[in-house]
Length: 79
Image (cartoon, rainbow, N blue to C red):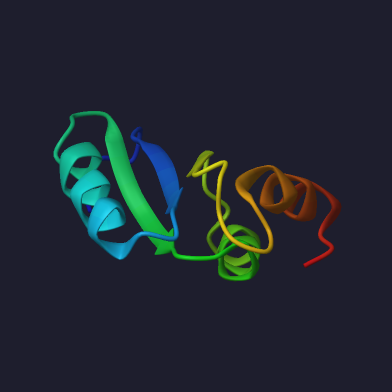
């Protein structure tokens, strides 16, 4: 994964094909490292707690718990 100064990203989307494309696209950009991917808010919250990414990029429209709920849960440590 390399660059110690890279922005560490957690990517969250319920569409695995889009998530894979986004991971390939962003993972190839200088200055960014994808440290994790999740397909739902619960997994995103768990990964955010364990991986401590610099930035979480999440789909706003996901079933049941959306990206905004995931952001609140990550912030509140409630999922």
